[in-house]
Image 1 (cartoon, rainbow, N blue to C red):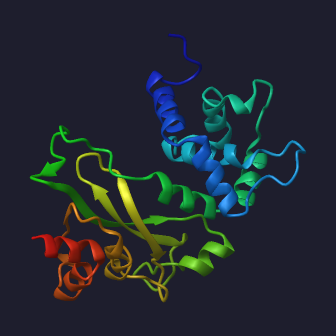
Image 2 (tube, helix red, strand yellow; image 1 turned 30 degrees about the vertical axis):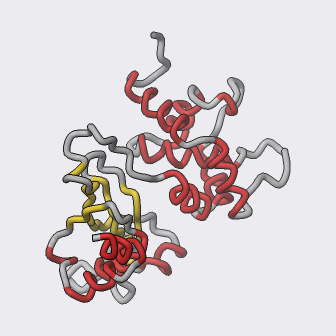
Length: 237
């Protein structure tokens, strides 16, 4: 097997990405959010930008042009003669915006473990976990306004805005199948419990969700128990 620059595993990752996230799903997300291409003037097509954004997550240590070069070997739409530039890719991401990615996530992300996957089930229950993290975002005026700047403990603000995310992950595959985002900066911070409460109504009735003590309280148990899947489970015994 002859592979262009990069490890074979890199190209396998991109191939799985392109096959798992269908072009139809990408087109639906783009159209639903009104980000479809408005003209054919050489700008990067929105569906290609969607795949590019996902590829950036796979190769976080590489620059725009390097990631685009890898992706060009997997998606035939890119064409052999096209040479993307960092500025062109940056402008394409701004035109796309975050909305299509959120819609696409809700369409395609789901548990992937099968019945014979080791550690995936406890009896009839699919093992899931509730987790939280904070990560840095680019310092732009929009990000600072949306997420705020956390304090450093010495009376000054940190250099980068921070985003808090709470996820429900499949234990066996580590797939984050539900996610809620909020600001983590001083004066704007959304707490982990607050974000988690937006996810409870979306839990499935066959999930056994584990969480650390930060999420363990009677009020949130009642909130989760009052959603339709859990009422159905209670009725069925």
